[in-house]
Length: 113
Length: 115
Image (tube, rainbow over the protein chains, first blue to last red):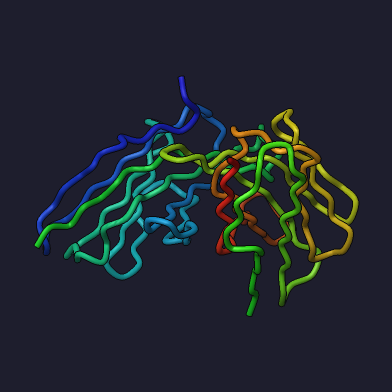
């Protein structure tokens, strides 16, 4: 089993819709969770971090964390064509020494006009 | 504010040639530094990380090495490149500190093609 799993997509949503991106992780002691956005040919850029169960909102983005079920999700409201990118989920685990981030392979999002 | 630089931006090298990629961070002291590789269509693979000058941890045994000669400088090297070394090399930094705040910020990357 992969440590961090994401559906590779592509996930296609119409402009203005809500895009829902999901991520599951295997290490039950994981403590810190991150979502990065990566445009084609560019480096990942941080969108959000979340550490506690529940929802965390930042503008059009909402991260949701459920440690009991070991999943973290990212909702993008009012999706725009500029949101088309690959979204990477990343997890830090205390068992990993706290310095190492494990990434999923990413979900490709396409927002269609 | 903090800034991370990488160079070169792109590199085409023959098999068997040496490699040196450089990463520098501005605006922070004593950062954790990381080297990742992203092969085409694949996820990010952690290669090395460093918590201080001269302190390097290797994640994957391979023909690459890393060095940290200065606090905010991280270098990735190879004596002889392989075809499989092609990829997108990313340097990242994070603040030294507690486990719960280890957000990593990435540089612009170096795209390496080994022919």
